[in-house]
Image (tube, rainbow, N blue to C red; front, side, top):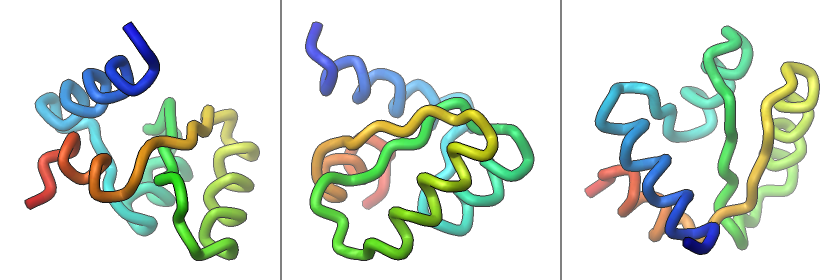
Length: 81
């Protein structure tokens, strides 16, 4: 199993169990409340200030950060229509 297949399964299962935060606001809230274990940033995201903010929040709260595929693919896995 490759990393993208595994990541797809993790995101899909997290969504099914109500444990998925999508977007900057939800992600920051989950990280600050210590409810996050993994943060996936879309590859090619063009807002360096947001990427820096998320990476620093994750570092401060010991949350692992992964670069995932495109935002469109992540959205599909997360059930965004």
